[in-house]
Image (cartoon, rainbow, N blue to C red; front, top):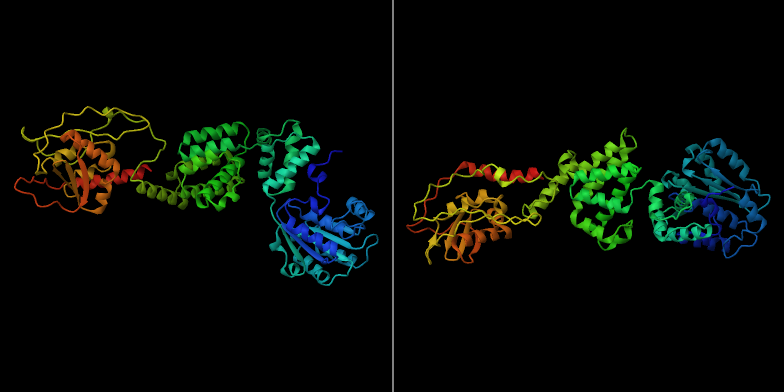
Amino acid sequence: MYQALYRKWRPRTFDDVAGQDHITQTLKRQTAAGRLSHAYLFTGTRGTGKTTCAKILARAVNCEHLQDGNPCNACPACLGIENGSILDVLELDAASNNGVDQVRALRDEAVYTPAAVKKRVYIIDEAHMLTPQAWNALLKILEEPPPHLMFILATTEPHKVLATIRSRCQQFAFKRILPGQIAQRLAFVAEQEGIALTREGAALLARLADGGMRDALSLLDQCSGGGKQVDEKEILDTLGLAGNVETAALMGHLAARDTAAALESLGRLYANGKEMSSVLGELSALARDLLLRKTAPQGGTALLTGGYDEAAMRALGEQLTAQRLLYMLTVLQSTSAALARSSSRRTDTELCLIRLSDESLDESPAGLSARIARLEEQLAQGFASPPRQMAAPVPEEALPPEEGPPLPEEPPSEEREYAFDVPEPRTSDPQPLPAQSPPPVPPSAGGEDRAFWPAFAAGLRGGVFASVRPYLTNPDRVTGVWNGSQLTLWTDTDFTRSMLSRPAVKEGLEKAAAAAFGGQPQVSVVTGRPPEAGPSAPTVPPKDPMDDLLAFGELDNITVSE
């Protein structure tokens, strides 16, 4: 009859227990020295060795040929306890024997001396399931037990055990087993069982086990049932998981805010039989790793789940900020928690991906916080628009004429006229600069010229000037003064100066001035009003209230597009 791997390969000595040396070494020394307590409390998550150590300790205290604190597993006492023929060592399940009547019967029986071994041992598994009345019935015998009696309590929820019980026991906390130790044990078991387990497959099973050796052996047992080589692909197909490569690709679509590609990836995973809860769980694990790399780049390495390509992790880390990762984790966790009660898991998962791709669709406080964080990032970058899914660009010929403040009247023929457009270069879709009119004759050397500025500013359209044109064309905000080879912009506030001092804007102004005046002009931006002009000072056109509205609209458009 076939026996499950986790039962067949259950450790039989303290030395065989993996990842719990801080407990097994202490129990070995106590057993070898004969300094044993009458009650032990083993706590920890599932599959970490609590019941296994309890059974080993029960054999060790009754072993006839103890070997350095370990049971020999060959004497009649060890063999009888292991096969269950010695009734002085009992393992009880508190989930089904949690009533006060069962505990009273156990207490009445415990006073009798053992018949075949030195100590009567009671192993109570899932001890937190005992009722308060059962605990009270057990309290007195735990406080003053007879010398031949030992209790070993095992639980995954120690906070539910009464404080009066905990104070009468030696408590040992079992920790999660490290993935490396689990992978090493899986490789040994696979070699003994003749299972073709790859190193990558063992590492993946160790991560999926979440620190539990029993879970890891059960997963290995499940994945090896087909008789094939147990590698990453076979494990992912058998367990219905998405896989690290596909999860990283899906996270990349979310980082780029490409909703269509993210939904296509999810549809492909759904068609391949992947569980929606598994997809969200793997996305949560990846987002957690990325957030740890952001917040703790040095000490957080040991906390990562691993399994993702370093280059992919670095690329995703550059695309995602800590604020957005925190928002993504919040949405993923809430969606995963509600998925069990959902009538359509696929629909809820798709809605989750849509919200992660576009924070403006999430009206929750977390979504609002994410949008504010994104706007702050935009402001820090100088209103540079991030990559996002947008409609196809409209040709410039089809765009409506851009409205602005009224231009001054047509100047006389002897005055200069400036009409040019310096668009911002695009890396993704380079376009040749439009043809420009021949540069006019520069002003006379050695004198200041302000008359050129209204027509000059009105000709700055599109490209880098899209967001700052309302400032340039507003005489109350900006005044341009040309002096030889220097173009000085006098601004009303430091904020306006910071807007015009961006490298892209200054470079565009220098190109425009070079096209108008020739040479290699320099542009400087200062705060204040220009010195009083001489008799030739230009007449400043009256302020148009529409300029303030346009300036507000430019900022508002940037915010809405986020």
